[in-house]
Image 1 (cartoon, helix red, strand yellow):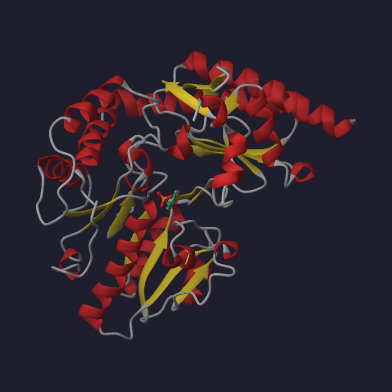
Image 2 (spheres, rainbow, N blue to C red):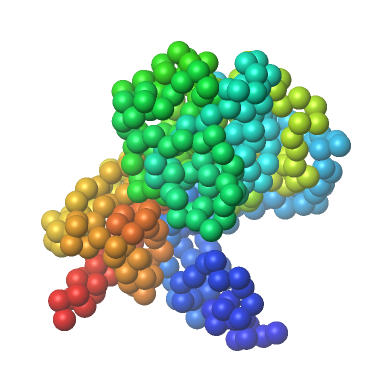
Length: 407
Ligand SMILES: *Cc1c(COP(=O)(O)O)cnc(C)c1O
């Protein structure tokens, strides 16, 4: 097949229609820029959905991947390997966690966490203590267990029967959790900032209160940091800013910088419940993935990169507020670090996708978080000049959408 035959139209012929990708095919990336088949250039504010934390083809990541490719690719967990051991050591040294389980995605990390929460309760309190409480609008992945714990019913509609003993409280509403939590609760699951649900930060008092309620009821606290983790908020993990320490933490997305990997981190108190033979993954802890993730962590977990995230957050806020002075389309700009949401005013509700498509036509890749929120999750080291240039493109895109609506 020639390149000409491999195009966006082919997608509809050969792919299951669960995605509807933008009308071009990217072929190459470097830093925070991407080029498509027609050599059009894009500024990347999407970062592969908060994944490419060091941009595209970061030279140090490319080097470590090539080196590992020449050394050892895969073993399975019948054998351990050096990159996995080094990465686990660095993750436990850098966080509250004592133990690590590796897998290949965020959903798998959460699947492991939810199974662990159930198993820990089963081992220590008996089979009756099995209820998981999570939050409305929360997102935890697309497996059947994770869409069931997730707080967006549309993602499980039609896939029932779903796993049971799962309840959903209101996010940032401690009374709502109080009304549901009991001694039958085995775990409470939340994102420190809800990502897909609209970039909604959990407030400090709420997070602290959730921890206290968990302790009162012998329930484990799980932080899903798949999106907020690995520097995204300007801290290695978001829990570090809140001061609220979970029992279990899941991480993926930025952890591999674009190479698939996920991990579940937990304390020594709970780890024994995933005893020998209770859980597993063929690829989990794959040497290629772990070698890349180790380098990602080495680069991101430094004062320069983490403080650079705050600097870039300020530039994004400044530029988005300028756009709002000009167009008046945002109700609120929120989020922390480089996980930023701009909620549209009521009049534009449901139209976030139109802005996304218009931005793409202007040469800007960005994201939405639901139908009402524009979301930005770029590389943590995106140059200031790229931010300013991308914002100029966003201004042109917004102008087009606003004009079209008037016509
Ligand atoms: C993306 C995401 C997931 C799912 O990760 P996958 O790698 O797509 O399975 C889970 N939780 C949160 C908070 C996410 O943002």
